[in-house]
Length: 482
Image (cartoon, rainbow, N blue to C red; front, top):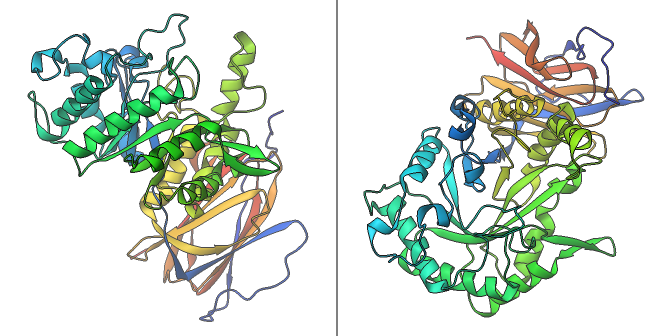
């Protein structure tokens, strides 16, 4: 059952100004049931990392959609190219570019880059970088057409190198896009829908392809393989899946290039998902891949009852994923990631349709507004402030300021259905003179809507208290008037 707010505004915050001392707000015992959040504006905790990467580009000719303005507004930092054929036919996949495997890979006329050129151009026009997935999109058909092992691994690797040559060095009327990340295949451990060969065959394909790419293009980063099931639980602890262990053992033993390990997770629990990068980092380090980056380049919320069932069951599951709760889920994860050893994260997907932030008609879901809330925090106030709160509580919180020190912001996510009382205690406040306070909320009735705006006098210590309904996402912004 979804939470129904009984108030006009679910966030009724009272701003109080404590004394003008130079110290943080003095600690005092919190009333029962109140979540205390202490923010020290005088202490930087590094930067809020721009981990709001996505999968798939903003333009979908097949669905007559162009979400470029949203990509620009959120400043999505990196887009992974996988399953592009679902949105733009004849693009990205090897078989859409090099359509006749019998052709000569050294000849320009063997390739058709046209639609992929256009697709990549639409992404780069938003300012995003790219993870180019070399391989094929998932195939749910009974007959498998493209996810079979290539008949000649060296030739397949040569084709991959010519694609890089086209996009990074201008070959075949190409470009100088400086695409840095090249990922080999997608989920070879996920059964026949993604790879019909054996694991040993895939390891050989990866070794030959990664070696050829690094030999010809030493400045790019090559990795993969976008593992579907990277971890398993054994005796309450995370351990590498059989595929992960065997793949890393193979790469370690044969000194195979692995600039980044990419892996996936779809989860019901945002805290569990957000903390998976730590065991993944430990596994990489144990295999002596100390410099290998960790990319979680597919992740999303899979609510209770999520399945491939048809009709109402399926519709309900995807509706839940794109709901306010799904939005709170992704806001939780993006904030919790800040303390995790993760290098790049890509939500699946920042476009439309199943798993997307938008409907097939381009209507933004609640999850899209929550994604925008986090993006606003990191883009406008990227300097992270030291924030202390009870991590065992249901709220997840991140605070930041800008380099000019004219703005402070708090992002709060409540994934539960219960209302929570919260009190922010802002110490060493550097906002002087009149301060504008703005509150934006994503809930059942608000789409990242400004629900309050007013002015207060800037003092060294401030308290902001009130109740946050659930599930919901709240952004509070304080800015000096100059």
